[in-house]
Picture 1 (cartoon, rainbow, N blue to C red):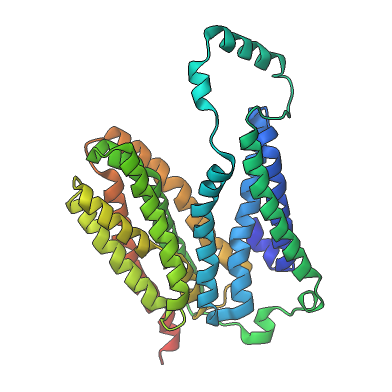
Picture 2: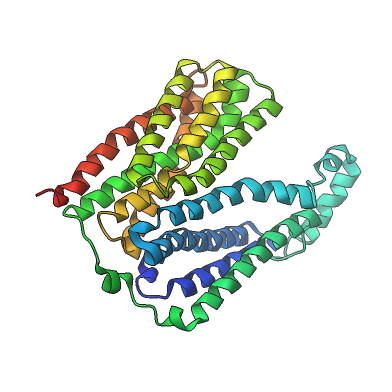
Length: 366
C-alpha cells in the first residue's frame, strides 16, 4: 500500500533501488539477530521492502510498455518463480545443511554446557551465529540483491531516467467506465487465485504423506514438480504472450486449473492422479497473475495506487487462506480440505473473469 502511494510521486528506479538496498541490509542482519523482538522487527522491515518491490515491478513494466508489455510482464513474474525455485536449491548446494545430526547425538553434559553458554550470551542483541553455513547463505543472496540495487540506482542516475515524463501525460490515460468496480473484482480474483496457489504449494507435501500415504521422498518430489512446472510454464508464457491476448491466456489457465482440481478431488487417493494433476495444476496457475495485470491495462490505465490495491488482495489471500485451511484440515483430517479449497477457488475465478470482461467492455460498446 505504501509502495503504491510512493510510486505516484517518486522515480520508480529510485524507489526500487532503495527497497532492494533495504532488502539486502535485512538479509545481512537477520542471521545475527539473537532476540525474538529484533528478529520480528527485521522481518517486518524485510517484508515491507519486498512489498514495495512487488508493487513497483508491476507498475514499472506498465509504465515503460503500457498495454504492449504482456511478454515483459510474463518475464518479470517468470523471474519471481525461477528465483523462488532455484534460490533454496543453490543455497543448499553451495553451503550445505545445518549440523542437526550432531545436536541429536551430543551428550547430556554437552547440552548443559551449551545451555549455560547460551544463557551467558543471552543478553547480547547481535551475535555471530554458530552455524556459518546459515550466515553465508543469507550473505550470498543479500550480495546478489545488493548488486541489483546498484543497477537500479544506475538507471536512476541516467539523464533520460531523471527527465522521464509520467505515462499518463505522454501516452494518454484510459479509464474504464466501471474503473473502481473492476479493481474490486480484480482484488477478489487475485485474493482467491494467489491464496489457492500458496495453499496447494504449502500443503501438498503434508497432504500426500498423511492423506494419500506417500513416502516423504515422493511427497517432496511432488512439491518440486508443482513449483517446477509453475516456473517452466511462466517461462513459456513469455513467448505465448507475443501472439495470444492476455484474456485468452487467462481463460486457458482457468480451464486448466478447473479440470486439474476436479480430477484431484475425484481421485484424491490416487498417487498417479496426484502426480499428473499436480503438474497440470502448476502449469495452469503459472500465467494467470501477469496476464491479469496485462489484461486490465488494456481497458484502464493503472497507477501506483490502483496496482497496489489488487497486489494487496493477492498478499491477503497468500496470508489468510493457507492459515484458515491449515486449521480446517486439522479439524477434518479425513477430508481433502486442501483440494476442496483449490477447486472452489478455480470455480470462483472461472466465473468471475467473464463478469470482469463484461464490465470492462461495457464502456467500449456503443
